[in-house]
Image (cartoon, rainbow, N blue to C red; front, top):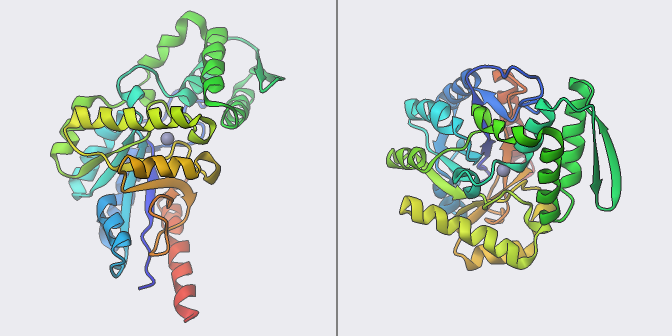
Length: 324
Ligand SMILES: [Zn+2]
């Protein structure tokens, strides 16, 4: 009764280290060897269930089975299909991939990847940006300054109005790399899944596709109309291209101040069954189905740190069991 369901959160996968230290500086993409070791560990110690199954268990207040775990992958990178899907298939594990539909449709690459790419390849020594009426100068003289600039700019842009964010990214890209901005399309690490990849994965019955909006803007920084449009058109696009119902949602950025009551109301109105956040923790019968916690998995650690990531949950559970 006091078990919980952890939902792991991945993003992308790598078959080799990128040439530049700036690319994947935050280890969001993990090596496929490490991913395989993690799944090997899960196959021996846990039962991987789908997000849909876990939502049903939580919703129906069914007895929580021990050692259940859920796999989710955000954003919709092509490495999900080329690298992770064969490993998931080998173990017969289910996973949910939350796709950003304008990215899948190749209308726009993800804004934070455009920022990372522009700063990586620019030969400019600095960038001056006006963000919320304050002018900031960021030095780009070496790798460390470039990484610090990406990290600072990203966190500032996450706090401003969604349209302003896109305008600043467009301006920054033009200023730093001008005509070379399309070179991002040559990097496999930043590439999106296509609909054929998605439908191939769907036919395996192992993968389900969830909605992660059209353009990965932060919904609490959007107007109500824009939020509605971001969610509804993305859900419609997925359903149109896959022929399947899409009722799982993942909030872009996913921290508690990245969505609000209005966002949840829209999700309920559009018949989503649940939504995952990036708030760290596991889930139990007290969890709000529209604010499910997750455990982020990055490439920073090794298999030992992966086991430790899963450990706090058992510690919490032991504490709960001891308290009754
Ligand atoms: Zn995301």
